[in-house]
Every structure is written in structure tokens, then in C-alpha cells.
Length: 327
Ligand SMILES: O=C(CCCl)NNC1=[NH+]CCN1
Image 1 (cartoon, protein in one colour):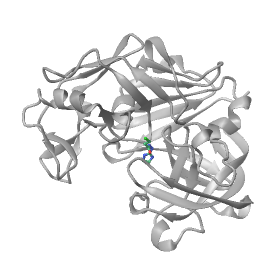
Image 2 (cartoon, protein in one colour):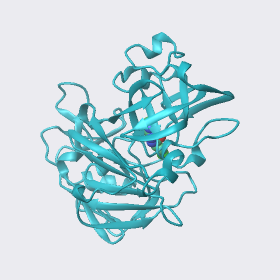
Image 3 (tube, rainbow, N blue to C red):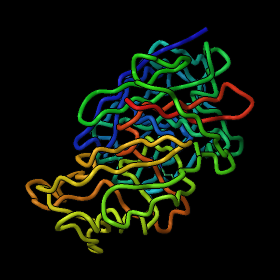
Image 4 (cartoon, protein in one colour):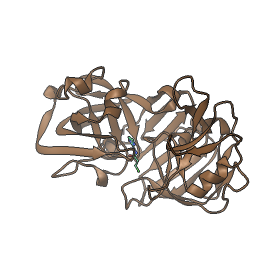
């Protein structure tokens, strides 16, 4: 029975978190992403102009999956595509002897520019893996029957290294009880229902929740437009800046805490997490950590929320469930 733990290292402004993964005989830094289901990495097949500065997977140690290809576009419209190999993957001591590795032959500029990241490791459900003609399993699905318990946990932190565990829940990482809620896998995400929101402005709607996904691959917290509007109505100097594509606030502001009710329990995102980052280096205007989920179709509980809790992604029972506990 395998169990393992790997660090989650924050990038600048906690824009993403990277973890070391051994693939074949390379160690790469991958962005673990519960909002997608492809394990892809830059490779010796990637054009040099796109892969400069990145760690590369060399498929020579793998076995090509003939005729298989992949092509993914993320919620932020970043994208990547390529071909597929089977190779050994080790994450925090947990080994998948034959894991589908998606070697990139083309990536969008967002990935080229993020030189610290060598690719993504998807932890959503394998039903949304993009490999054709035959979708392959995520790392978690590949190893889940060898794990002591079919769970992984997420302990992200603000501006500090957190961790992912596989096969066990670490009781030292949380306080109080874990609140579990059912997961709807119809869209391939760890999708759940939030009961309601409160905090912030005088009309951050309370009592009206909605459908949301837990997504480590998204930096911010995307909520119903009325909730985001209500929250910032209580923040001096905050406004919706259509040119920046969202709510901005003075970097000097200390926004109010934000509360989310899930499974009858309330989880608090400290206001400081919602003063996210300067629009560009040196700017005194910051981008908000809460934004409207308009056009997405559901809310996205990205890193701004996840770094306030200990999250348990549990597929050990008859149906998947999500657990949240105070960090
Ligand atoms: O694509 C999404 C949103 C799904 Cl609705 N999350 N995962 C991710 N990875 C890179 C950017 N975003």
C-alpha cells in the first residue's frame, strides 16, 4: 500500500504551486491541477523557442502510444498539445510504473513564459482526459488501487510551501472536524455546492450559494457576480476595471475577511488573501483575489480559497466526496 507526500512550492504571488515529479529519469516541476485531467510536460520534442528555460521530458525512456495525441485548452484559454508515451512516474514516493505522459509539441505563450513550470499534472476525473482516440487515466487514477486509501489531500499556503499527500489524510495539517460534501462528476471536475457567502460589503449575498469546483490550477476565487460585487462594495477604492478584466483595489487596502458556508460549516478566507497582487510590478493598484464567475457556468474555488483550508479529495467510497477543514 503506497502513501506519499510532496511539497507544493508557491510561485510569485501564489499564482501557481509547483511540485517535483520524477518522469522516466528526469525530475520536473509540475503544476498539480484538480481542474484538469492531463499529465503533460515540455519535452525534447517541444520547439526550442517554446521550451527554452524549461525542464524537458526525454521520451527515449518511454514507450510511444502509437497514434495517440492530445490537445487541451484551459479555462483561462491557455493551451497545449502533443503526443503520448507511457513511462514511470514517481510523486513523493508513490510510483506509477506505466503512466500516460503527454509530451508537448506545442504550447501557448502562458506556458512558455512561466519558466518555473515544466508542465501540469491533472487530478480531475479521467473522463475529461483529452487523449484521443482513447483517453488515459490521471496519475491518481493510475495508482489509486495501490494507495492505502483512494484519497489525495491539498494543503496550499499563502506565500509558503504547502504539500499534497496521496493515500492518506494528515491529521497534523488541520484543526477541528472535516466537513464532507458530495461531488458531482458529470463535468469531470471535483464539483460541489456551496451553501452561501458572507462578509465584505453590506450586500455580499448570504444564504445563496451555488455550484462550484475545487481547482488548484486556478489562482483566484471566482464567485457569482452579485457576490463579488457585494464584497467589493465594502472595500474603499475598489472598482470593476473592465480594461484589467476584473475588480481592482488599492494595494494599501486591507479587505474584509470572506466567509463561505459549505456542508453547514463556515470557512473564512482572510481579507489579506483578497488583496492579490499588483497589476504590474510597482503598481499601487492590485488585482482582487475574488472575481466574478460570469460566463464560466459555475464558481471556481481556486488557490485563494484553497490556501485557507485543508482539502481532502476522496474517491475511496461508493461515490467521490470533498472534505474541507480549517488549516
Ligand atoms: O482550466 C481550469 C478551469 C476549469 Cl473550469 N483549471 N485548470 C487550469 N490549468 C491551467 C489554467 N487553469
